[in-house]
Image (cartoon, rainbow, N blue to C red; front, side, top):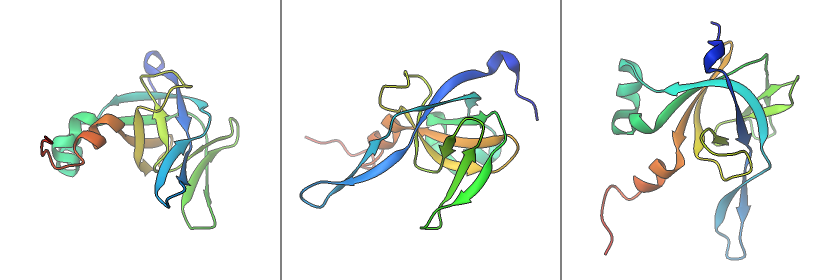
Length: 139
C-alpha cells in the first residue's frame, strides 16, 4: 500500500539502551536520533479498540518508508534494519513524533508488524507513566 504523499513527514527514532546505576536498578537511556520518513495516524478500528481498550487514545500507527531487512541479535530479538538509511528499529525504542529529534522521545514502539512498508504501533510515554499505578491517587 502506498503512503499518501501529503501525510509523509520526517520523524526520529531513538534506540533504547538499558543502563544499570550504582545500586543495581535499571533505567532506559536513548541514543542519538536517526531520521526516517513515514506516515503517522491515530489508532482506531475494532481490532485495535479490543486490543488496547482505554489506552487507544494514546496509540499511534506509524508506517516507515523504504525496504528493510529482519536481523536477529544475540538475544533472539528482531531488529528491522533499513540498509539505505541505516535506521535500526525494534520494540521498546523511542520515537519523536511531536518533538524535535534531540529531545527525549514522546512515544515508545510497542508492536511491529512486518508488512511492506513496515508498520509500527507506538504508545505515548506520558500515558504509560500515568496509568502505571492503576489510577490510584497519591497523597
